[in-house]
Structure formats: C-alpha cells, structure tokens
Amino acid sequence: MLRRFVPLVLSLSLLGASPTALAQNTDDLFDRAVAAQEAGNYAEAERLFLQLLDIDPDNVSAYNNLGNTFYARGQYQQAAESYRQAIELDPNYAYAYNNLGLALSNLGQLEAAIDNYTRAVELDPNYTSAYNGLGNALHDLGRYTEAALAYRRAIELDPDFTFAYSNLGNSLQKLGQLEEAAENYRRALELDPNYTEAYNGLGNVLYDRGQWEEAIAFYEAAVELDPNFVYAYNNMGNAQRNLGQLDAAAVSYRRAIALDSRYTSAYNGLGNVYYDLGDVRQAREQYRRVLELNPNFAHAHNNLGNIAYDLEDYNAAIDHYRSALELPNESGTISSTHVLAYNGLGLVSWALNDLDTARQFFEAAVRLDPEYDAARENLTSVRELLER
Image (tube, rainbow, N blue to C red; front, side, top):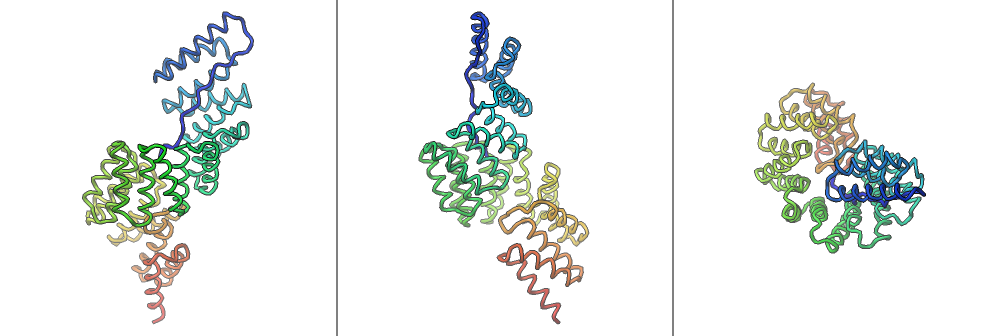
C-alpha cells in the first residue's frame, strides 16, 4: 500500500506543578529528546524520554513522543504501548489517539485503528490528520465509500491538504468514479507538482480506462521523480504486459522486486510475463514464490491452477482453484479471482467430460460477472453439448 499518512504529532511538554529545579531538569531533558528525535537520532531520543519518565512518570507528552521514536524505527507494537500509556494518563489526549491509530494500522489492526481515529475526531472535530488516517484505515478494509467521506471532511477542514486529495482519488478509483478520481489527483499535483503518488494515481485511472500507453507516461513521470517508487514500476509492468511489451514489462517487474524483495504483486506479474512467453517452469517458480510470501494471494493460486490445467494435472488445478475460492474475492484486470476460479473449475470439469458440473461452474462465474466473455462463451458451448 502506498504511504498516505501525515507525520506523527510531536507534543509539547506537559508538566504539573512541581519544584522549580525538577521542572527545569525535565524541560531540559524533553527539549534534548525532541532535538534528538528531529535529528533522526531515535536511540538517543528514546534514552532521554525514558530518563525523563523516570523523573516524571505522569508526563503525557513524553509517552506520546516516546511512541513516535518507536514508530519512526518501525517498532509499531512498542509505539502503540507508549501511546496507550499517554491515553491512560489523559483519556482526552486527541494526539495520542491519532498516533495510536497510525501504529495499529501498521500492525494490520484496522478496526482498532478506526476506533482510535474516531475517538481523536470526537475529541477534536477539526483534526484533519485524524480524518485522513481514518480514511486510510477504511480504504484498506475496502470500505471505500466511508473512506471517501473521511477524506472529504479532511479537505473541507483544509482545502490545501495534498495527501487527502490523492487519497480521495484512490478511494474514488476503487469505486469506479474515475473522472472525479482524476480531478482529485490533478488537484494534488496543483498543490505539489512533485507528488509522485498523484502521478501514479492518474496512471491507474488511465489504466482502468484501457489507455495503457497514456498510463505508462504517468508511471514514468512518477519514477523519474522517485526512482525508488516500487508501486509505479509494478503498475508500469502491468500496462506494458497488456500492450504485449513483455521484455519491458519483465524489466519493470524486476525493478520493483529489486526495490522490495517481498513484493508479491511484482512476482505475480513477472510470472504472468513468463507464462505469456510460454516459459511454464519460470512462471510456476514466480507464482510459488508469491505463495511462499503470502499463502493468501488468490491470483497466484489461480495462475498455478492455469498451469496445472495446461499440463493436464487436473487434481492440482482443482486444488488451486478451490484455494482461490476459499479466499476473499479480489478484483483483477480480466475479472475477479472467484470468477476466474469458477471458470477454471469449469474447464477442468469439461476436460474430464463432466459436462453438467462444468455447466454449474460456468454459471457461477457468469452470475458473478455477466460481462466475462470467456465464461459466457464456455457456458454456451457446454449447454450446446448437453442438448445434443
């Protein structure tokens, strides 16, 4: 997923009434810790915040900022624990709820993240960053309409909030509202002409319209601005493959993998290129690598099912297609994973001369996607055979 978050909120030192010498000591520690944090010296910042908390264990801001030092190093569980300590000391501390939402999002605990973002905006109805975070968590759960509402609220509060325009574009694209999505990406670029994610988003809109050459131009603009933008390389590979530019697509996928060796979508795309080139061994190797990294990657199960079907290994094909059906239905360029799995099972049943079962599978595919030509044509052919 793209990084669509705003920076964590640093908070000012909050001290209760205390002796002057103690206050000066804690203030000095806090200032030094924040300076270390802002300089990227997170280990030193952690040490100083912990030293401060030994002296003043009720310092809410110290817990919040300690959480930020953990968060900056990717230690999201420790960050969440620090934010919870801040909230325990001050249940009305909106910043800590927002930051806890960020940490929980990175831990994949999206429902809990939503609860904390929601609490943050209840405490501070003008908290734009919390609305943006709320939108991100909702988007990642596939609740795109609700996500769009959260992003719109962030924009209403801050009409120059670049992140929110791009994020709104992402949700609108998922909802199929491509023109409005493009408008929001363009608005993000008006605010920040170097905002790579908006270029990538415009490329995705054009991709969804089937304008693959035009999409590639936007992906290229994104990687020109950020040569390490892994998502844009993967998306470029998808568009190049659709245009039959298989060598170029392979280069793009490999570039994405070089930047992120665990990027399953790029391995899957590279497998598709090898499959198109007729190199079944290499294709299978890439798809298996996907499932090593993520056993719940439904597209890879379908792709391995296709290879097994081609090799007439029908039992293996059935296993992979059924594995895809056991996972959530995911969208794809041709159709969704469940549609493709039902169509694949239909083809296997047809090959095994079980025409009635084949018909049932093709009917299931067509029910899910009446526009999927392959399943409709297969269903027509099998019905004709059954009527003879």
